[in-house]
Amino acid sequence: MSEVRLRFAPSPTGYLHVGGARTALFNWLYARRMDGKFVLRIEDTDLQRSTREYEQAIMDALRWCGLDWDEGPDVGGPYGPYRQSERTKAGIYSEYARKLVEMERAYYTVYDKIDRKKELLRTFDFPKDYADQGHDVTISFKVPQGKTKFYDLLKGELEFDNSTIEDFVMIKSDGFPTYNYAVVIDDHLMHITHVFRGEDHVSNTPKQIMLYEALGWDIPQFMHIPLILGFDRTPLSKRHGATSVEHFRSIGILSRGLMNYLALLGWSVGEEEIFDVKARVKQFDPSTISNKGVIFDPSKLEWVNGKHMRMMGVEELFKEFSDWINFTGRRMPQVERSYALRVVQVCREKVNTLAQLYDFAYPFFFDDYNFEEQFISEYLLSPYAEELLKKAIEKFSDLEDWSVAGTEKVCRELAELGIASKNKVFQTLRGAVTGRLVTPGLFETLSILEKQKTIERLMRALEHRQTKAQERATQA
Ligand code: GLU
Image: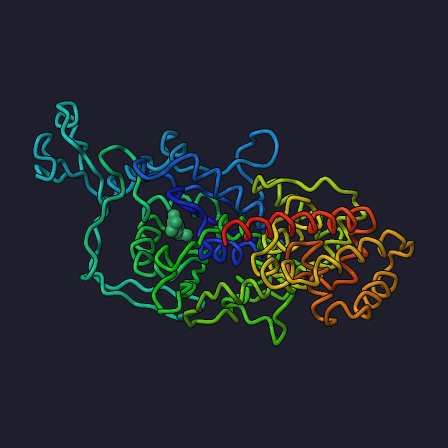
C-alpha cells in the first residue's frame, strides 16, 4: 500500500480556532497511526486577508499543540510550511489552468478595465491583445453536464446535480488561484491520500471532484467532520467568546488538556474520558468519529485540564507552569525549586488551569499579596485578633518542628487558649499569613511558609490591623 499522507491547510486570516486545531489533530492522528506523513500548507492566496503574523501564530499554536509536520521547505530548523503564494509565483497553478484551457475544460474571461464587472469576452485562446491593453483576464472552469459523486467516510456516498453548480473561477485577474482550484492542484502534487476537514467544505467538494476528473487524477478519501457548535447549536465563533488556541493557552489550559478535550469532540475512544491523546495514536480510527454536531463546553475543557494537572508528575507540571508564566509575561516567582514544587503539589488539588494555579499559589510565591476585604472586616478587625496574633508570633517563634504535624500542634494550642472559637482562630491565622480565607490546608500552608515567612506575615497582619483600625476611627 502506498504511503498515507494528510495535510492541514489553514488560511492565515486569523488565529487558530479550536475547530481548526481539532481538524489538524484528526489529520495528524491518522498520519501517525498509519506511519504516514502530515503536511502543513498555508493557503494564503487571499492577499487582502492573509498575513504573516497570523501564519506565524498558527504555526506556533500547532507546535504548542504538539501537532508537528513532517516536511516543507528547509528554513534551517523545523520545516517551514508550503505556501500557496510562493507556489503561485513558481507558476504551478497557471500551468494546470492552461492545460485545462487547452483541453477546453476551462476558458478565459475578459472584463472591461474600467467597468470591471462587465464581461467582454469568453475564449479558449489567450486574449493577449486585451491583456496587453490592461483588461482583467480570469480563467474559469467549465462545469460539465451530469452529476458529480463522491464518497465521504462519515456521510457515505454524496451526489450533486451539476446543473446546481455554476462555472467557477480558477485563476483570478491578479494571477492568484482560488481555493477550490489550488486545493486540488496541491493535494494532487503533494500526494495527499486523505482529506479530513470541516463539514462547511462539503459544498466545495463537487467542484474539486470535477477538477480531479478533468485532470484524470486519483481522488483522495474525504471525510467531512461535523462542526463544533456553541451552546445555541450554531457553529462556534467569536460570538460565543474567545475560541482561539492562543486564548486557551493564555488562560492556562495545557496542550495535553486541550488535545484530550478536542479528541473527545467527535472521537469516541471508549468509556474513558481522560487520556493522553498521543499515547492513543494507534487506537485512532476515523470511522468511529461521530457524524453529529458536538458542543464546545469551556467548563468541561477546564475540568479535563484539571484532571491532567493532577495526573502528571509535579516536576513536569512545574515545567509547564514556568513556560506558561514566561509565555504570558507574568512575574516569575523567585523561590527555591523544592519550595516551588511543594507549592504546586499542594495547590494543584484545588485548581483546573495554570492561571488559577498562579492566583491560588500567589501568596506562597510573593509577599505583596493583598488582604481580602472579608478577612479584614470579619477577622482581622475583631477584638480578639490583636491578642491572638501576638500569641501566635510568640508560639511560632519558639516552634522548631515545621512539619504539618508541628504547625497543627501550635494551631490547636492557640485555639485552646480561649481567645476565640477554633474556627475564628484558624481563619484569622490563615488570612494573616496569606491575605485570604480560601487556601490549601492551614497546617500545610504554615508548614510550607516555615518560620521566617510565617512570623513576618503575622507581624505584617498585625500592622495592617492597626492601620485599618486607625483609618476606620478617623472615618467614623
Ligand atoms: N484553507 C481552507 C480552510 O481554511 C482549507 C480547507 C481544506 O482543508 O480543504 O478552510
